[in-house]
Figure 1: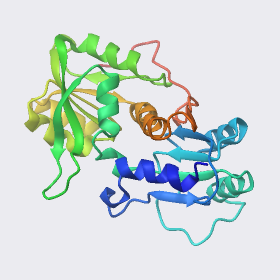
Figure 2: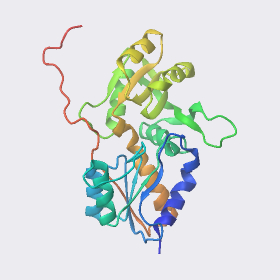
Figure 3: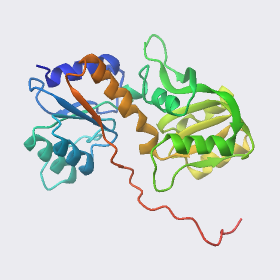
Figure 4: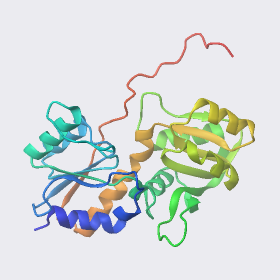
Length: 276
């Protein structure tokens, strides 16, 4: 019999909780480590739709990348949105576990999964971890087999990731050749300077802001490709699922949620083209 604790031990061997940032909230949110587990569902967000899915498929454990309660709470009343999810999970016999920044810096981790989805051969971290830590660091740098124009590379990114309402945006000369690429799963505009210093042709991440992006390009930085936060981290789900699948030789059924938890639901472009 495989227990919830057994599954968590396998995950924590690859994504050690001690490597998470000090502000992060990773680990077991609810659930009994002694309870048996035969089905696990992986997702990016522990949201109403993915909790519904876990209950519907009969999973005993939901593994999420994003924490449910990142900031401190003093209670989980059922009339609070997050409290309601905790109550539903417990009543349904479903545990919830999160691996966040510890999964970001792992080797392989979130950015490795993104790089692999884009067809990049990883050559190293974008921001190496300080010694003597054994973790690899934040983000990845990788290379395509052959250079391609930015417009084609943006299409490659869009085709590699799950669809979202506003898709993929790129900034820079559409004809710029792209071969060496930095990626950072999740919000990565704090690493714009690191991407520029790395000498890459393009930087793929999420949640880029207007002014930092414009200033980065004006300073001669690499082209930017902005993807939905949820879409950029979704490839990690299969990576983490593979950890459990391998550890238990198929005795634990592993599922990856395809329910879109990206908050944006409508994407519209102007019919008039707007002003330039």
